[in-house]
Amino acid sequence: MWRARQALPNECSSGGLSAILRCDDFSSLFPPTTKVKCMSDAGFFLDAVYISGARSLRRMYFGVVNTQGLQNTLPRTCTSHLDATSCFFPQNIINQVKSPLFILNSAFDSWQIESSIAPPSADPSGSWHNCSSSFKCNASQMQFLEGN
Image (cartoon, rainbow, N blue to C red; front, side):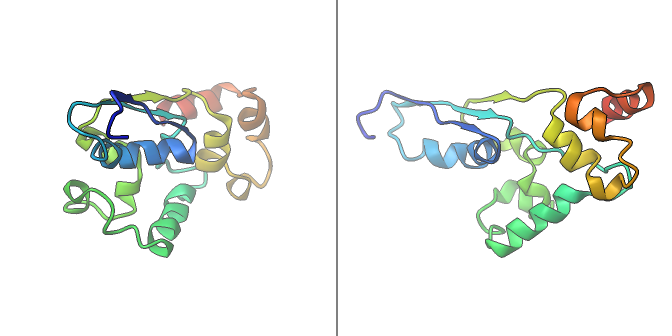
């Protein structure tokens, strides 16, 4: 790696989240003459209130951060003013990444809709199923999605 002139980790989904969280750490593995850029594909997860008012990903991320003991590995510039779980969400640390970072994320992601906004546990009637699985959303659902 010491001879590399360029490096570009390109990760997807949870790997894309890692590309954001660890971009600067990856960059530090190379000499200053190496051009390092990071790419995150679908690694931007929503810290959204879902249709029933809870936050499923926040609860899941809390478990990940605590089970894996990530509190001390997250950027101190974030954890100095936010809790560690909040610092696991890219929107709270992205402005602190110093290395060039490319982000690719779909505006409407069926997994995000089903997991972050309308999980089955929050939609017992199944009224969001068509919206989350095939983007066949009614007007009020689209308005909700566009407001989040």
